[in-house]
Amino acid sequence: MYTSSKKPQEGTFLWLLKIVAGLLIIIILGIHFYVNHLVAPGGLLSYSDVLAYYQNPIIPIMEIIFLVFVVTHALLGLRSIVLDLNPSQVVLRWINIGFGLIGVFAIAYGTWLVLFVAAKGSGA
Amino acid sequence: MKNEPDSTNFLRWFDPRNRNLGTLAFILNRITALGLTLYLFLHLIVLGTLARGPEAYDGFIKLAKTPVILFGETLVIAAGIIHGLNGIRIALNSFGIGTRYQRQIFIGLMVIAAGCIAIFVKSMFFSH
Image (cartoon, rainbow over all chains, first blue to last red):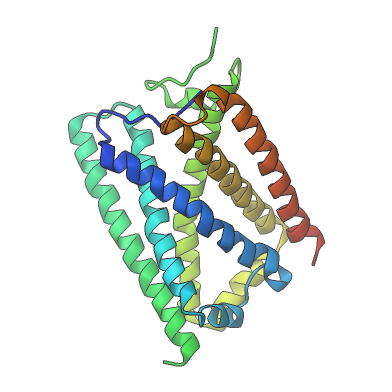
C-alpha cells in the first residue's frame, strides 16, 4: 500500500515537516469542524458569534498555528504531487519560488485577518 | 493487469478500473489533498468578508446555508476526515508502524470516517 516515502528532491526535513504538520492539523481541524459545524446554532457561526469566539485568547493563537501548519502542509503536499510528475530542475525551481510566495502571502493575510477579528471583538 | 498510478500520465490517477486497495488509498489521498488545497485558499478569500463587517459576512453565511453550498461543505468535511484518517495510516507506516496490517488499518479508518461523516451529515441537514 501507499506510504509517504521521501522523494529524492523532497529532502528529509520537508518530508518530516509535512507529516508532523499533518498530524497537528488533524487535532486542530477536529476542533474547527466541531465548533463550526456541530456546536454552532444553525450549523455556522454568525458575525457576532465569530467575534465572541475570538475573545478567548487561545482561539486566535490556535487559529494562527493552524493556518501556518495547514498552509505549509498543503503546499508541501502539492509540491510532492508535482514531484511525482518528474519536473525539470528549472520548473521545480519556479514552483519552489511560486509556492513559497503563495505560502508567505496566505499566512500573512490569514494572520492579519485573525488579529483584525480578535481586535474588532475586543473593541480595540 | 494492475492499473497503477503513472508519473508520466496525471489522468491515470483518476481512472478507477482494476485498482487494488493500496492504489485506491493512494488515489483517495491525492484527490482529497487537491480538493482540500483548493478549498483552503477559497476559504481564506471568502473569510475576507469578516473584514467587511457584519452585513457582508452574515450575507455570506445565509448563502452558505443553502442546500447546494451545504452539500459542498459536506464534501469538504468528508474529504478532510478521509484525508486526515488516511494520513494517520500513512504517517504510522512511514515510521514503520503497522506496515503488516495497513490494509486492515485502512479499512478500519475508513469505517470510522464513514461514521464521522454520517454524524456531520445528520447535524448539518437534519438537526436545524
